[in-house]
Image (cartoon, rainbow, N blue to C red; front, side, top):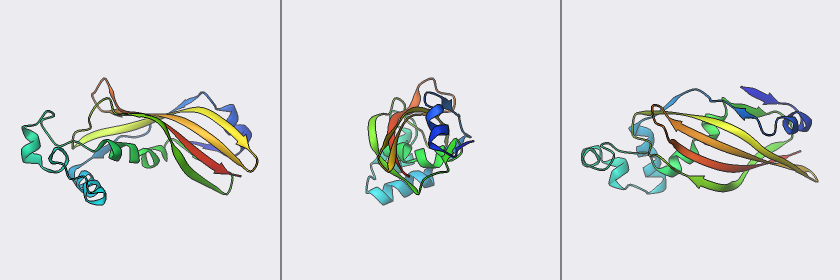
Amino acid sequence: MRTFTSVDELSEAIGETLGPGPWFTIDQSRIDGFAESTGDDQWIHVNPERAADGPYGATIAHGYLTLSMIPFLGRDIYAIDFGSSRINYGSNKVRFPTAVRAGTRIRASATLGEFRLEKERGQLTVRWVIENEGQDKPALVAETITVVNL
């Protein structure tokens, strides 16, 4: 876990890859909860019996569930301990190269891409890679942008 306590400290770390963080299991109850929250209840996510005969042999997590795990997985990788607040500003490029089957463990790494200062805020771009345990291809590659209010 790396904690950045100043703009200068964060700026000096640009280009570094942090992590990976600890493994976390994506279980069926988390997938079901995401399906319920979003209304995306496609059988490949919520019907283990039908999914057993599907292309993955099991249910899989929603791609957007995997993306939404970034804040949770990232909290064990780094923290920004300066400024008044941090706000998710958006994502640039998001890809899901490999599905996350129910019961799979995932973990994240973060590469600090850019930190731009503008008046009373900074904008941090981070490239995230979430890997599936035992898979060659990652489950997710995404570039996110966080606004740090100074």
